[in-house]
Image 1: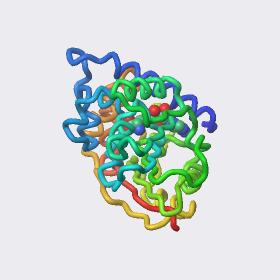
Image 2: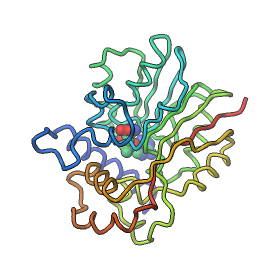
Image 3: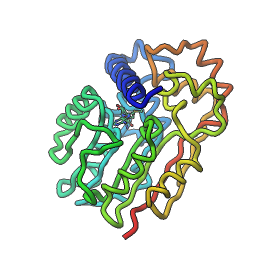
Length: 271
Ligand SMILES: C[S@@+](CC[C@H](N)C(=O)[O-])C[C@H]1O[C@@H](n2cnc3c(N)ncnc32)[C@H](O)[C@@H]1O
């Protein structure tokens, strides 16, 4: 698929997923239920109660290992409905600021609504691409991201943008899906691409990409290897209403068990 086609497909799918997540009620939720993704991703129960948590499509909790402090500037790549923006705003306090970037207007609007409902004035949600961030050079203390870079068709560009926008000494904490030895046939599946599987790269390739962009002190601080039931649950709750049938997911899941995990990467832009 061409780069622009991937962006179009991913945008279209996430708008549909957001609509489906927003209209879910407990009575007709998928088997995994609203908030499952946030629970599996490791958010505290208080965070899982926020509206933004039921509209969350993350695969980790990037702030859990980030020593964000009051007054800092945090940038969230692919901020979606804004759960991590709300949690970051709590950490930086009123003297700090938080910026989210997302490529779909619907996600940007939803995040802005969730931010306004939380009464926050220091969160700025921008429409934009993570391959070409609408952010000044050397302007942020922390870059965070939750299950987004796997969706980019140009990961090298994203990694160099991270290096560009971080202040010298700035840090990043990224939760993302990585895969090892995914069968080629599954790589071609466009819906699995949007489900954060088919576009994912290996952990080693991820680290190489970050290093090639000039980022330093790289670590994988956490890994969550999905069991078959978690894969089924994550894929089905990520893509309600999309073209992947329950039968097909049941066929795919055993083929990818042990090959797909969520990894948390940390690192820094050297001084
Ligand atoms: C899996 S969701 C994760 C959303 C959010 N981080 C969360 O944890 O709920 C991926 C999000 O990234 C956005 N996205 C995907 N590719 C993007 C790109 N190249 N540039 C900007 N946003 C992108 C999508 O619109 C979607 O909101």
